Amino acid sequence: MHELGIVFYIIRDVKKAAEENDVKKVSGVVMNIGEVSGIVPEYLQDCWRWAADKEELLKGAELKFNILPAVSWCDDCKSEYETVRYGRTCPHCGSGNTWLLRGNEVEIKEIEVPDN
Image (cartoon, rainbow, N blue to C red; front, side):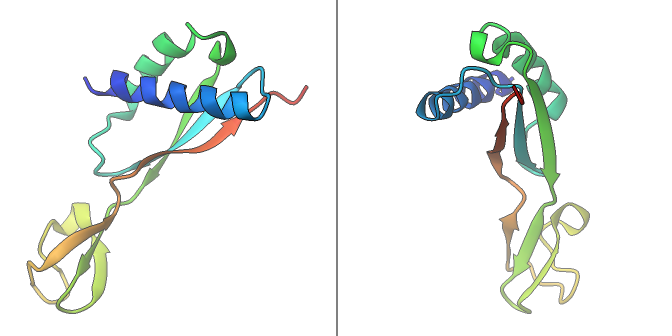
């Protein structure tokens, strides 16, 4: 389960951003996760709850996700298409000369702090 390692990196980055911005409490973290990133959101959520509650800064903080669709590019016909639906073969021209354009991201989008 590589999700636990990813959670440790998320926590490290959130703690750094909180320190740089004099934030004492984080109420939530919003992640962008690509559809083909290999991340299982439910596993990430479980690991987050276990690890975040060990940090005073993150105790009770919610982890939220935006799942970003995977999109591939065809070099032959210069078009984009849905990666998960069509795989490596372009549905427009049948070429295999394609590559993943987006959809494998794992990034922190927002760090939320309490209103008070």
